[in-house]
Length: 322
Image 1 (cartoon, rainbow, N blue to C red):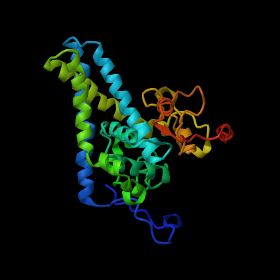
Image 2: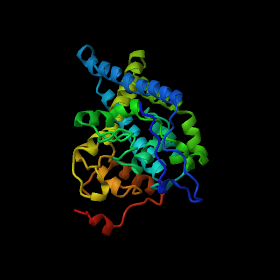
Image 3: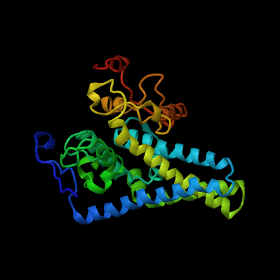
Image 4: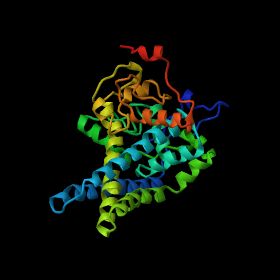
């Protein structure tokens, strides 16, 4: 474990000239709690995913459980991509309080940490992208040690950072979210949303066939197996799309665009685009860059549930820097 605390630089000063809060919370007790939560978050879905892919060899699994899984995976990725990322982290659009809260609840159901924790890590990632202090870079540890092997960097960026990096300080990176009552409500009830994300697909399956086995399979595939797929789809953005793919915009840094992941990540894999235009609600900047998250936002806009969707001007998009 590192006790990295960012040194003071001119950019660490607040508007009044005082020192900004530290980047991280270098507290052993909080770090140990993070280890326990991270271990559970990673290990439990892996175990049940292995159970889920093994069961069809022993019993007949009806086709509709694939549909239940796909629906819950989509809602989970929309919650992370549109809710946690484009809304809470970057304020890329405005909307009704109900819709914004539901997006954050869907994101919370994916068990990637409470929304304020998630946003703090993401904003810190943008602040120090692939440099010393980045919470999950595949090139450096938090305290600036370069990975000698690409594989170790990839593993660190995917899941290892949760066991090595100190928690990002929300007072520095997400203080404004504490003023939003709906965000605080969703954040406070994080574990309730995870539980609901497991039992709700169980009730979907129960409505199709009223048996305990159907409830169990619904909770398994739509709940815990879906946790595994949403988590690793999201974490692949930290790992794969900082190492593999195209970089049309130099100002996007080491982040890449990886088209093959666009469907399962709700458009998050247009990551070079995102690092180039962080406040854009549209990550797939061209018509051929499939972005389910942006499509969802456009549907919600038609229903007048969201508005003021931020996107870059066409002239800005056309400048690739290369």
